[in-house]
Length: 141
Image (cartoon, rainbow, N blue to C red; front, side, top):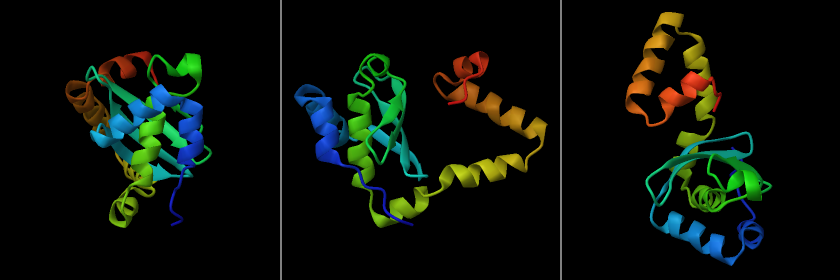
């Protein structure tokens, strides 16, 4: 496993001073939860200042995607910066746990019956904010 590392200085320059400070604040406050690290990218859920959750992907080249309202306009955001900072700060144990996590999950889900998958999705819709809406719209992620 090659550690995922970001060009933090370059990414923060692209964000600009205000967004870079806010990304650092998100990192310092622990508002980023890394979900997986694989294929040269980190996937995370970031809690915004209002409590809203955003899905974030950041790749080693500093590019990424975010579900926040700023991303479509700017093609970057503080959530991407905060995710890169958090991923770079992961210790070896956390990296091992997160490395390839989605691939492992995908393989486990592929082995389940359709009925078992429906039960899992319904449980997510009941307990995860926004999951029901994503499922209704047919979003993939």
